[in-house]
Image 1 (spheres, helix red, strand yellow):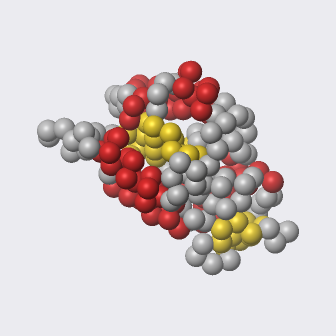
Image 2 (cartoon, one colour):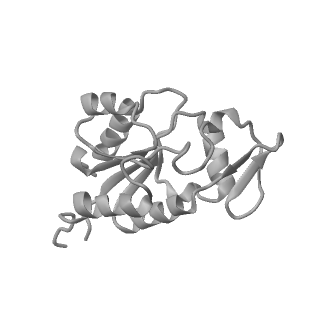
Length: 173
């Protein structure tokens, strides 16, 4: 059995190509398998590699959450329209920059239901590192993957997780 771990995913520029979904007013309409648009014809396209990566992480013990600085209602509608809302066990999206506090809240919530995740088994993926100082100070030394900068793609991200999380992640049943 694989020991659980947390995968916290930023969304803008990480799961989809748009850099501010909060600026794309719903309702959204599906254009094709990977793109949605709003009534102003603003198109948002999902990164298919990100979707495959999240599915892979779930298959390998991840408890998944969004960790996005956005309007939660816009994010929820976008995820539903893309058909990927079910890939996330939790939503830690809010229209505030306090990602550290939201991550702490999730860790504490999981602990309250008997799922204890040490901070070294928390993976946060973002295309920017602006939240890392607060996360390191208030959460601890998590595994941060600066997608597109410290890694060139999600295959590289999965290699890091295999080395840092999954290599010691099994426990006897």
